[in-house]
Image (tube, rainbow over all chains, first blue to last red):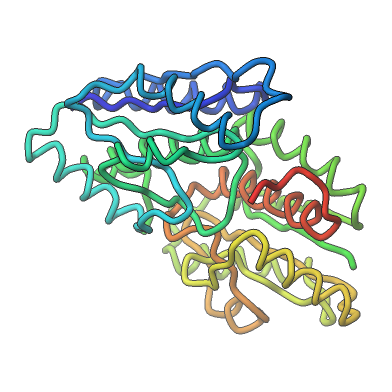
Length: 157
Length: 157
């Protein structure tokens, strides 16, 4: 199963990039993984939040294929423990899902268009994290999910 | 109000240290903040998990004063949204609490002694994060809490 992680906006903190790189390298031992960063919109000062979200949605959807399963990282999404989420991923793999794309929105979240296209919503926390730092959280969690699936010692329960 | 953040084990990933440093600098504009890292235990190969947790507890309690309010970062703790947690912190400040200490345990969690001493438990996520990366999550969230209290533009709801 191919896993794509798509975020809106470049990673601005060097420490976020460093951390993501460490775990992405590890994830690639388990699965095909692609990380796509959509560049931030420019000249947005005359646009409303809704207009920004719609423009971001166009750019997001250019990277989504019809056959992709789309999961949004969203505070109102489903909560899982690490073990539960690992099992969810394993189910997708077993059921033959070819490609899943996880998406983190921009600073104002997702437009309606994106919610309509989504197959699921995942919440990492009831707290809000910056759309920069959430990248690190997700990528570490994805690595952890694979170590759990494989029974490897990274995860202490 | 003084806020102390105590963790067991040194930060091993440079990116975690870099990220924490960025937000600690910002937090210090709002409050007195101390970050204490208790060094990892050495020669633990002959010890059980419970023995390790008890030894860590002794080291933790050396840094806790009788008057400190102790909050454990624990998966079975209370969930808050960022805004709710900011309000909780604000309540502590208003009610005249002098010192709160937030504690992240070692790889195996907390001993019974620590649970008994605790005044509260906070869960950042139903997922398990490494006890390295959770530092970054907590510190960013603490910074966010102060920006919410002050009505500053970091937090988009």
